[in-house]
Length: 167
Ligand code: S3P
Image 1 (cartoon, rainbow, N blue to C red):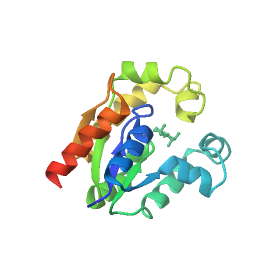
Image 2: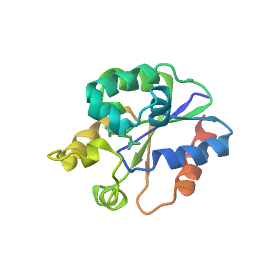
Image 3: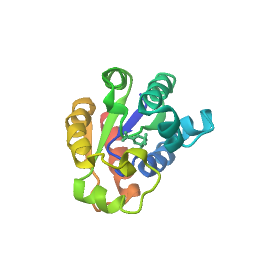
Image 4: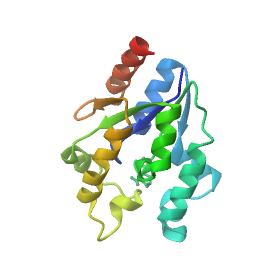
């Protein structure tokens, strides 16, 4: 089966859902942010700070194109849709599932977050970023799964059933 790319805004639960889904399907799990952190031996926040967002996006795109396109669950970073070439790549090579989360729920979930640079940057309009990404997530995804007030295992089960029926 084609690899499943989980996309969605920061805090939509991509990493946790990916873990459950990989277990259910017995697929390998690829968490893009974790891979970047171990490949460059640096925290994402430090990459943003020292090298800037554009460099991080270069790392992200380079990694995306090296990931397995079969039998893997890929947890992407929320900004993977910022580059059109990433969108084209994911559409062509994978089954893209959008974890849709309301702004209200994101704010609740990330209330105490200190790790995500774009969430913690001062002067950054996060609501505007969220709004600007909605169209991009919908554009690339084959399926949309709502996540508000749901557990990661429950969301993973929904995706599991979906792929069992359709692919
Ligand atoms: C980003 C989201 C982060 C991480 C980086 C940039 C974004 O991943 O890739 O901080 O642009 O939305 P999560 O979506 O896992 O938080």
